[in-house]
Amino acid sequence: MYNIKSQNATEFIDHSEILETLKYADENASNAELIDAILEKAELRKGLSHREASVLLACTLPDRVERMYRLAEQIKKDFYGSRIVMFAPLYLSNYCVNGCVYCPYHHQNKHIARKKLSQEDIVREVTALQDMGHKRLALEAGEDPVNNPIEYILDCVKTIYSIKHKNGAIRRVNVNIAATTVENYKKLHDAGIGTYILFQETYHKESYEKLHPTGPKHNYRYHTEAMDRAMQGGIDDVGLGVLFGLELYRYEFAGLLMHAEHLEATYGVGPHTISVPRIKKADDIDPAVFDNGIDDDTFAKIVACIRIAVPYTGMIISTRESKKVRERLLHLGISQISGASKTSVGGYAEPEPDDEKSEQFDVSDNRTLDEVVRWLMELGYIPSFCTACYREGRTGDRFMSLCKSGQIQNCCQPNALMTLKEYLMDYASPETRRIGEKLIEKEMALVASDKVRAIAAERLVKIENGDRDFRF
Ligand code: SAM
View 1 (tube, rainbow, N blue to C red):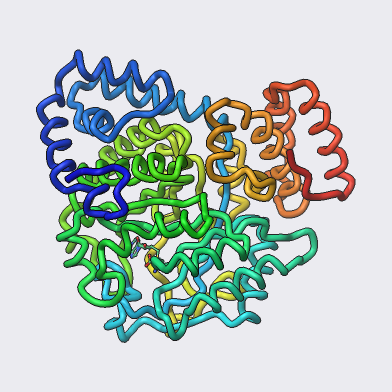
View 2: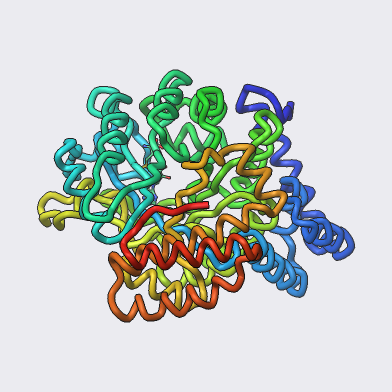
């Protein structure tokens, strides 16, 4: 039985509720009257239920789909302005005891090099990431209680925050590690992590169990209830995601929104971010084996519908996607992207030797961070290295209520511009800097409060003169 507030994953992600939702969406896929009513509700920018959003995703009326895309773009502009938050993944270890059939880290894979970064390796990798200009990382690790216990992850977080190279600093460490206990989430929280990210992979329980045949990750409930435990452990920024290609995308979409609704109803705060990875080719993995792959048009429709359904939730796209796909999705709701990513364990400081490859999947966007930053600015976006909210304690419901009242805009725009200015001063090529300086001038005018704008202008001068790390 569907129960949004249940502590049992099979009740808050109730299979029959999803099937009924999909049936309802199919029956109404060309119901212009209902679709218009849903779009009108969506225009209020307060979000949609999984049923309403599923109707939009199923919608077959071209003019309504067009309206949906325009609305997604407008909501994106209203909530996020032109800002795009930048980050990079850092793979700590690819030792893994699970048997996930889509992931090259599965424990039977004997031909991938197994690696784990030592604290000295981390200093080298993070220094290289700082030298590119990164301020925000997402830590990634396989699940292995012996090789990657929580103490190891905590040591890595501590090391990363302690590294200060030239003007560099990693100011926010997000963590993507396997589902764990409330006690371990408390430890991650106390270590000062930003978002705890865990992809559901698939919300379809039967498929989930087949795709995760062995290892602790096999347990659907333990995995799906991880965000509840994270919240109970004090982490109030959590990041959801599904791996598109494993199951029917419409099923995943409904499940994802039901998960978001569950968190909002139970803890008063929905997910901080949603990621939308698609399966990629990898060592020992052929994506064609998974027959639920989605084309770029469907992918765009999913992103637009998520943006409309959960306007306050950040949406992340990684370098799994090409420059072309990323460019299209930026318009429709993406608010965070990675740049210059390596999916190998190590590889930022020095390239991996060919006979020791450890990467998780092929990346489609191989550009440097400077190239990605310049490209974003040429498209009219502000690459933002801001990490202010969580450092100012604006997390969970505090962050969400500021978002909902629109007040967050008075912080985000100047913070984005000040962190971009730091990037331009410390890391950008001359051409990127030239474009960036012009952009900052133009975008400063859009800081709504006169007082905040004046303070931000003073701080930009101070950054020019060598000061760093200002924030509202
Ligand atoms: N081990 C952790 C866990 O249990 O969730 C998470 C870390 S894993 C390095 C990060 C994510 O990469 C996985 O959750 C999965 O969705 C994604 N991934 C795995 N194999 C992939 C592939 N072949 N292509 C694209 N993404 C993949």
